[in-house]
Length: 493
View (tube, helix red, strand yellow):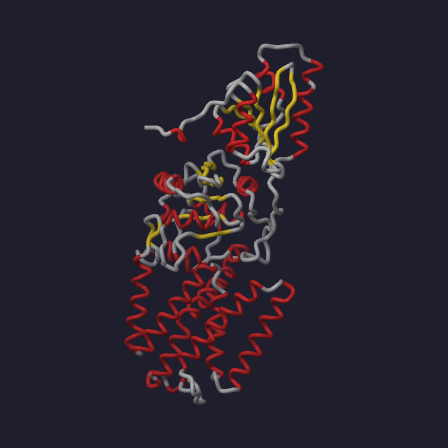
């Protein structure tokens, strides 16, 4: 049975009734930014509803000039509604028939014309959202390449993507999410490339979101889509680069654009999607491969360097003679594990302090705090020098990880291995590493194995992970997304 709140109330033919509805429902006359402009066109009342700040005033004025001009150059006509619709010189004019649609469109930033004696209204898209111009993202900088990036405006973001893919099969499906926020969420994909089951899965998960509003924009959408829980490892990839988003669309991925967010969600993704960076593809294949291997070493260092060093301290007999110098030469009153944990937490505090410090002071604060605190801790005998060295090396590996979410998750793995080694020593390292790998193997996002192409093993795809192939040599799309068209280059079938 349909409740009263769910009924679609038609637009009344009397302008006074519509105005009264807007006063009760939306706060017309109370909210200063919600307005109505009343005027006469061919002896009939015409009301314009709008939100200040969300629509372009110059466009609205031009529309009003066209309509007012009808009074001087047009005779009375029985088809005034059609006449007005033809005079609205805008590329996006839509007819609506219910008051709910009227409210939704006005609050989204569109303007609505309601004509006396008509049970439908005209919606004109003259939105001009406040925001910044496209610029290079701070977290995905490249030496060479485009300097434009996604911004908080979903219209600009889809336009940046279309600028790179002029394909008639590129689709952007729009869905409103949030009972109160009614946030625009767009699903982007290439029709003859993306897997229909993946598209339907993403679409259904977004349509099933039941919440008042998307306060955290894309992050809220992600948590509804993948149900991550307390798993620290990212199950979707974020990007603020339009070229990265376009590249994934051409591979068969589905992208999710959320209004008010400069980040675009890429699905599905694996662990190895999070370790790639645009810089590798802006260099020659040889240089790109070298950069990728260095990055792999940094990621490996961020996870295993500290646990291995701590293991060698507890089990010095495991060290070969050539590496016997590894380990602290000085004794302190504080256990080494506690030193490592304090130093690791201290680095996190410094990182957070740098984020919350004004930009001109952040670099100076970070360097001074790191050097002074580290040196004083050594001088007073709280830390041994090697602890600072290895924590700093592990931290550099963390910063070398392209994905912030993955770098933080890897820190969880490092702490887990340290605790296992502290309790069980060498067996703890073996068992802890095994549990860690099994945990990664068990993760799936949109039915995609997280460690593909390593587990399950796909030799062709794994070689492409290790070696940055040239673009002419990359003819096949990744099989993990199950693309409808396997081949990237024309002439294949």
